[in-house]
Image 1 (cartoon, one colour):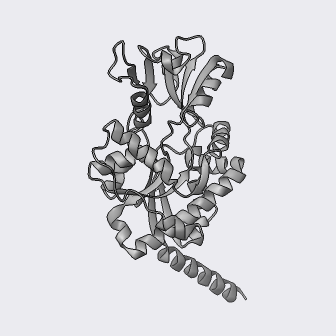
Image 2: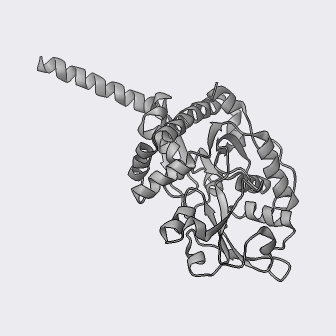
Length: 321
């Protein structure tokens, strides 16, 4: 009997080893550190959704010194999460990134100002200091200022741009009159720092019609010529969106998984996943938002020519039937 049990265990282990060996390898590079912003991918990995699709996915966390566009250009990832403005800018410089799916249907970007400060409306921006993140996150802000006809070089007819840290300290320390926040992250950092919602004036990019596409999935164009790679990405997108839908329905459980992958402060992650859930769509790219994003970058000369072939719907068409 013992021999039979040992034989069965050995067989099961061998099968598992073969399955693991046979799984297609995929490396995903995130835009930032492990947090609720990427919950869907952590859920897909921990719930076995990638495994069910025959994939062995490695998720690489990002950070302030990591540009996903550079990572994938250097062969360090198969697919990346980044904002479309950053992806189109990289493409314009020769890194031929292609959007294969768009999990974030809405923007989470906002600018917040103190209600007792000098900025009450967009008309008050002129002559004031506004905090902005860089590393590809600045493009939506510059597009907005361009739309308003405001110079970003400072002076009485423009705004002074503060290269903002990835927190709310510039507002607390009064280094800027307004700062950039995400609905799911830094806004709540401001609340945790002691500000009340009624203390803040919020300029929401989406409500103002200034939203550009944010977290999408991008691959290198030449790789899409390989049918095997295409098939792998179809399975990857299908499993990822399954992970996102699960995270939306089970935010607390998703937050626990984020914590297991390096997330900080479980309460903050729970809140973040709940807010991110409001931005998640079906994974399909909205051509109208793509055109708005591309036009905004062309208008402010961040890209020099109208992009062609910068996205494909073939992957989501197959993955999300």
